[in-house]
Image 1: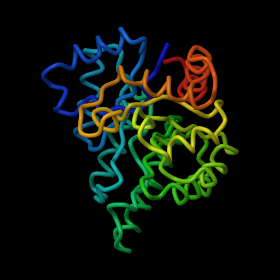
Image 2: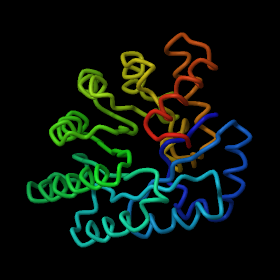
Image 3: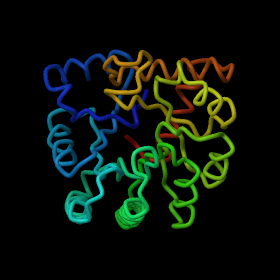
Length: 250
C-alpha cells in the first residue's frame, strides 16, 4: 500500500472532482492520504471530508505564515476536542522564505513551540513545514524534545538533515524531486529507513504549474528507487513500513 503523507485535499481546487481524484489514487495503489490543514477552517473541512472519503486521514495545524495567537488557541481547542479523529498535528513549522521580520519570526517560533507541545500532549505525529529554515527547524524540534516528526518536502542540505535522521525523524518526498537537484541529493544521502512518500497536492508536482494529486506518489516512489538503485517494490515496502512506524496502522 502506498501512502501520501502530506496533501491539501481540502483545497477548493479539488471541489469539482475530489472523489475522482481519490479514485485515481486508489487505482495507483494509494491506500491512505494524510490531509493537512493550513487554517482552523481547513482542519474542520478535513474532518468533514474524512467522513465522506474513508481514504483520508485528517490532520490539524496552523501554517507557519499565519501569525495569529487567537487562531493558534482555536486550533489547540479544536485538536484537543477532535484528537481521537486526528492523525497528525500539521502542517506546522517555520518559514524563513516569507517571514523575515524579527518580531514576526519570534511569533512564528512561539506558535510552532505550542504546536510541538500540542502534538506531544495528544500523542500525535508532527507534520512539519521548514521552507528556507531546514536547519533551524531541526534544531528547534530537537531542543523541544520532539520525537514523532515528519519533515515534509525538506529543502535543506543533507548535512542539515543528518541530526534529524539520528533523532529518528522522517522525510517525505514529493513528485517535484524529478526536477529538484536539491531533493535528489537529499534522497541519495539519506537512508531509506527515514523516507516516506508525499505529493503536497495540489502543488509540488512533477510539472511546475500543473495540479498535483495523490496518485502522483508513484512518481516519488519510482524516482527514489532509481536514485537508490533499488527495486520499486522494495522502496514501496520500506516507505510504507516507515509510515506505519510514525503514524501507526493507517
